[in-house]
Length: 353
Image (cartoon, rainbow, N blue to C red; front, top):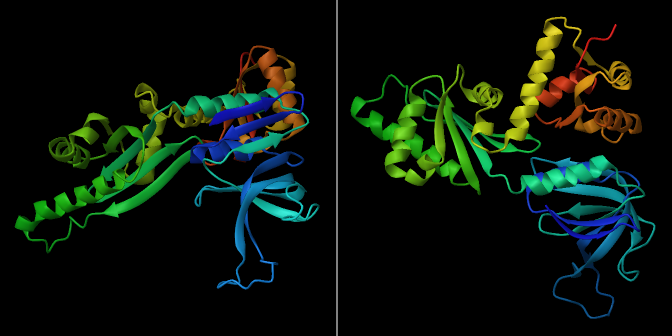
């Protein structure tokens, strides 16, 4: 994410999204009531009287601004769409006051104008800019002839697989076994190579498969081996990926530690709840009481609640009284667990009576 232009008097910031994570950040920055402008392309019917070979019209690209009603981020398609009423644009090409869906795309600047930019809005922009400097991390979990992968995004883990090797069949001729294993490993490597910008990788799993795969890439793909490290897990599949995150291995590799940290913090909250501890509280009313008492040491907030004014006040109060605030993505397991607790939880400095 890059800031292209700022106009404090008008409450305008122009941003340039460069990654899928940036679109996710934009989906939380843009709110109903904002004026959002971006370049768009529309097919305009030819009214000159000349018939073209195609009657589909002519494509024209221009800036359009809408007053936002709703914003939707589709992580599986990588699309961010803002719906609202058209407020500005070429009057010969658009109908002002009509409803329109604006597709916000990568490498296409977006102007956002708000009545008020909160400190949390600005903090999220800073996080997006800082995150663009963090190398991407990939987790590969191998168990027998199954491989699962997870690439860490700022909003959670994007899963791929399973890749199935078909190694364990009883009818397999022993002399063909190694070739089938090699084919399995090649398929894993081919999938790894589809990801761009991977600078750190954990190869994990409960058995010896991870070691064999690491030896394979060390001999044939040393560049991949150079950015990899091995880690044992008690389970394969997505459970194994989740286990890697909980161990904090990714922070040690200086990669996408944010998600791992969010999951670990949520695990701390659940552990305290499991002990029926009075050093944790959850739910909006209970957390607000703790914040007003200055008792909150760590506040966890699910991203879906950031637009609620009373939640923003709790966050401000917590920081003003020396507490820390962590916003959890609703897309990963830790965020889903926080959502089940009402979206707010706090670890306390001292117990409240």
